[in-house]
Length: 346
Image 1: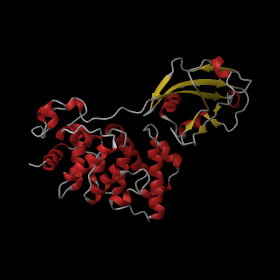
Image 2 (image 1 turned 45 degrees about the horizontal axis):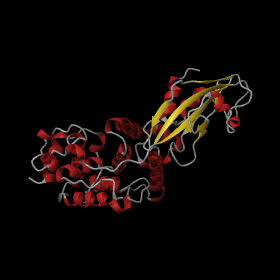
Image 3 (image 1 turned 180 degrees about the vertical axis):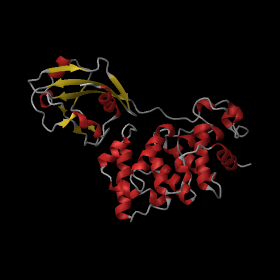
């Protein structure tokens, strides 16, 4: 029995019951694939359900405000995915008469859609003969064929894409592509795969040579940089506060946060007050200023490690551009700030 036949049979018996597998609607498939980038199914499923509930069609998503979209995405991370999703929805609605692109080449023109996502949508929805290659597929192919080319190199990407394409069946392209991804996620797992019960173990090179743990090969990650964030949570006598929107490119773009003072290292109160940029945020006259969390919150991102302190600033004077504290939960904020808001009792 062929490699692809074994996987397709395994998939028919073992696939998870997921809502986006009950439709060929490209909007639903696209939404699920964008959500599942950098996100596990268990975490992404409630977000998918929430988006479909709030925006049943691509027109609904296109007509939503960016704030609404970001708020619904809150907590999922990698917020550029949400911004790209919204941008592409508006593009399809306004420039393509709400008709979703129907092939791999056209799908690649959508903002936020790369080779993998375009391959998944075009094969699942339109049965186009294109191979998906994600982390799960890399693992299955590297182990089965005994390939030690690093998967995060130009050579590796080309080699695995070529191999994956050569293994495509002549029909049921969507099921096969989903099968190999599901197989990598549930059977050929990164840690502790049950190789003795694997339907591919007879031909698996890694199983035969005892190299399961060493494949696939990936070059070392980019060095993690540390940043030190000091959020100033201002509270006025009339229970108002101040937030600002991050408009520059980078982490948390378009999300809201408390006014921020970024420092080179962790600082104490007296060092914080000596900084030249502090007076634009903290007035010279205030009632009270104290550190909320004695232990820094460490928030890890892909290439950054944020060390976060929340400083509570109580003042008597009115706050410029203030909002009521009771309104703060309506704004999309990073998950670390959402947790603070939920736990803080002012």
